[in-house]
Amino acid sequence: MSSKIKELIIRYQSFIKYSIVGVINSSISFVIFSLFVWFDIFVVVAQAAAYISGLICSFFLNKFFTFKDRKKSLSQVLLFILVNGFTMLTSMGAIYFFHEILGIQEHIAYIFCVTPIVMLLNYSGLRYIVFTERHGKGN
Image (cartoon, rainbow, N blue to C red; front, side, top):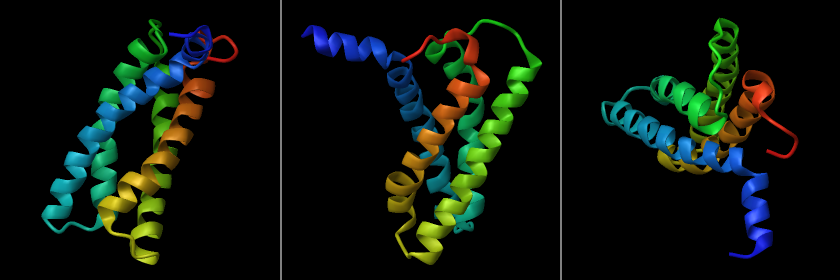
């Protein structure tokens, strides 16, 4: 592997780890979302249930794997909930916009429209608000 690639991997290590955790959380959420849609539950409710289902897994994997944060802090849990609450509301608005207003099929909207928006917002919130003490610049 070239030194440039190694350098990029080291520089963006936390985002790469966050992305791996995101695949796990998104898979869990997608299954929950699909089950709710299969039972013909309104997509906004399905999105909320899907998002919440990945939340607990996300906290622990991001805390210990992505950001290697070992401190115990109630304020950190509250900040995590606030950041994810904001991104959950954003995801609900986004699924409504892309599916109900633009008419994009709900699974396509979920994967290709909502997920990238939520991923960038949530990573930024976790990195710069929730798990701030463990990072140097560029991680």
